[in-house]
Length: 207
Image (tube, rainbow, N blue to C red):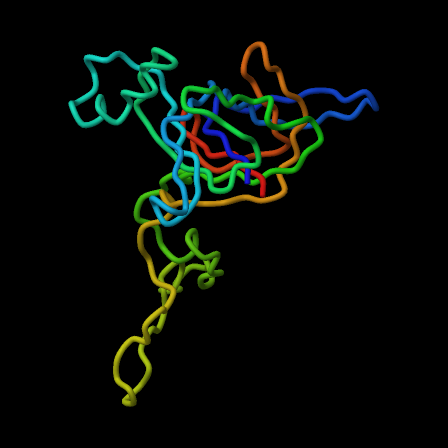
């Protein structure tokens, strides 16, 4: 499994060599640094802990400074966030960079991020209910309708589709094609849309 943290910059469109217009999402993925190498004997599983988001040393508390001591000794950088990638296929060392070069154009990856928050919504927007007639005199337009279960059991069944919070939850979209990679500017162009608003952090990975 290979993975990399990035930031959603927005959407645009490009033209392919065949003359087709393709909508793409622009993701900027700064290099991540190997902070810790976890092993089966010591930690119970094997994984590489990567750090992202270059920051100043004064912005870190003492626990984060101590956790990054080996990274600072080898790469002289400080990071603000961490994530783990298990069973990374490459032989990485602490302080080594991981960038967009781990992927290639034409490859299909999965994208995981927190979706846009829509606030408290009704069943028409949240679940696509049709609602009632919009004619004059109708008292049933966009309301939920009957939710009871009669005398038996006499309560609302758990799991009923009801109004509530919509969005702002972890969402994964699979088989997103990489249209183009720009290693110099640390930019990736992904076909179509991905979860989250502009500026939201996204996790790109492939198993």
